[in-house]
Length: 518
Image 1 (cartoon, rainbow, N blue to C red):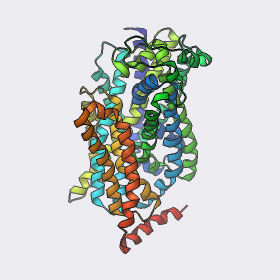
Image 2: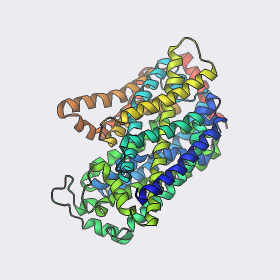
Image 3: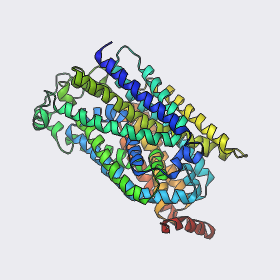
Image 4: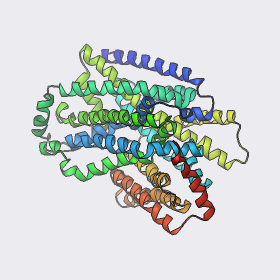
């Protein structure tokens, strides 16, 4: 066993013990469904902010997005991190956090499907939303498994990837099923601190590498880069140093929009606003979360943009998904200090992935246990039974996503892009317009939800039939952005010609009274 493996195993062992302790500690605080799903709506600024940020960034961001886009685009890829922090985090908190907290508390909703049911007085919309969440968040979580599994395989080449994915699944299941949202809030705070320390250390280590040349030499060395003969992804130094992505400008813009605006319609992100306790916590959380996302996002893409220099322009075996693992081994794979930092980075990426997984699992399990099953079952569940069922579906979802991840699906970035596009494309219009306008009708909301779903579905089918699925996968960012735009446009347009009846208008007026409360 190598020193790198020993350091990593020790760090992972300590981390696992801490997570297990938090799960046991939080068990007594999650005995009601309200506490299990949204922490009793009493979660503070720091925990909510870190929970939002850690759910945003997983190993896929580092291994998939940062590795691929940093390698192909260069320094311009850092704009994705900036966009995520400003558009996906800051603007989301400013526009939606307080309104979401107030309206969901007033209506007594704990999940996104419940929000649709009570805002639009539609059980059918609740069922459709629950199905979309459960079906399309499975590949999302599978992408997280794949990204982290491939990274650990770089440090432990003799161990199969599925072993690491199984370890991640078991560890996530233990503390999530035991403690619910309360456990995830505590762990996200710890994971967030680990991520901040790890990313800062990684950026310093990368910039200090001889091929990079520090801050002063980074741009000049990148500008002098020349692709090796036979490079499957050839590029030039001018492309890699172009501040706006050069020939990849359009592709860069679509990725910024997908990964930033996409959070506006993702239930696992919006759910953080349900749980925060008051307006003052939201103000503090806005600043904390934005700074966190700026450091993590920009740090990840900066590392990716230096990858060609560090690896000498040689794409590692395993392709684009192996870029970041190879960079880590090159930069931190020797020396006691480097090995300690490598262990920290491995825990960082494990933390990032587990925090994303726990948010997705909790969202998906509640969609079935709280929204889907009670809606089709005539008799209602006792609270204790519903808690047991919710915990059971947490386990089931972890198992389903693990099985899906073990299948031979190599393009982990596309998996996440499709999931973001479909889920956010369905929900973004009905969710946002439902917060701000009394005039949005049930039919308008339905139209927006179906419009977003069909935009991705039909586009994928047409492109796949003409050019193959790989071509459709390459266009997933454009399809996701189009789905969100369609949803946002269709909802108010259809609502204009399908006005609410008097009784429905009065019901909606009563809902909007919550915004007059302190």
